Length: 253
Image (cartoon, rainbow, N blue to C red; front, side):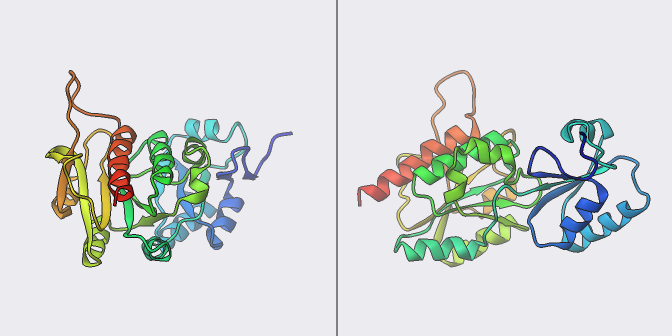
């Protein structure tokens, strides 16, 4: 029997107008709300208003995409992606580092859009002793089911904060004596850089790298040598190499 309204077989997707409305009235973290193009009648307007009130991202998508995501169930022109794991605050991440009596070790993802990349970064970060990861609310993948799956369980142990203004967050971290390192082209060698003290490593978008404004906010740019024909590495691979260098330096102290 086909579902008509509620949770789809993917537990991170809520479908149907009534189910999404009830979700919006609650406190569960919502990644975004998907609305079929052309749908602007009845309770859809109430859904849009609540999204704007709660500053939740709305994405206008093709009805066929919603059909596919909903597995043929009656989505009524609307669906919502909910987080596979709860977010924390940046202060929670810093408090965790303090509890462990360690200098903060943070990863900042600047518009990482691929779920596999974010999941892989979370997995490596957990293995390297990272205290938390910061992602932006917009133009970035959130903690969806594919991120959780790719992290291979690491998401359950990793604190992830989602912020509205990444540049402002970097300024706040710097005020707390945390040095911010951008992983990008034309920087200092990754293995010749001193990462002692509080450290936040910025990993940029898969295609465009670290954004100009974010890069300007960083204290140091670090780079990996490219000896082949291509001029860039997968974001999660680059992140993993530099994370382990930071971890190595901390272990040797």
